[in-house]
View (cartoon, rainbow, N blue to C red):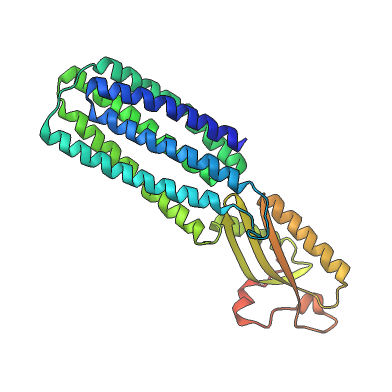
Length: 308
């Protein structure tokens, strides 16, 4: 499913690049040329997404015991840098064209090309976002964001060229290109920030961590507290690691069953998760262990599961 989506993105980008280059050369429009550059970056990003997904889907091996999910994160980071470089280049070219002056010809064909580009990128980006959500693929999400920026930038070029055709104010072509580049630059910075966070093994979003806490809370009869809750994400794979305090009087079979139940609930709440649970015997040793056990650890006291 992910490979098919990436392939569709590659095909659509390749077609649109050829149309934009042809329209840009015919019309002499810097805004269309900037769009061709933008789409070229999108094509590179789509290719990177395709190959990173192929790598990320490989099973764990002795060299990569946690799998190959980081290929997707690395791909997203590289794509974000390409977006930033493209945006800066577009601004440079637009400023040069603004001061040197240029003529525009054949704007009617150029306008038609940009209208087609806007519609194609809209539908392909929606499809990529849909598959990215279903598969939790950061590479496809990044590719979808690229095409989303193309939707707005292509629409901006379309409007700009239409105004130029009506009013004759050719400087608007360069102004439109600069506006598009600023929008692209913003998207690149946001994507860079997110990809770096995953490469550096930042914790899962707070909303997802809250889901983990809720699952643990639902097992408060068997588990009295938790400690050392650690989370991270590698590609579409979540990794959850936690220590749980259980009554020291329970049999190993009962504790094992409890851990399996918690793992099942966590997997249901957060699909595609690799879960590591380490059970610890509670400190209290009295007959009332089930009611009174707790961590003898000040740092963990906030994580005692409450009997509400």
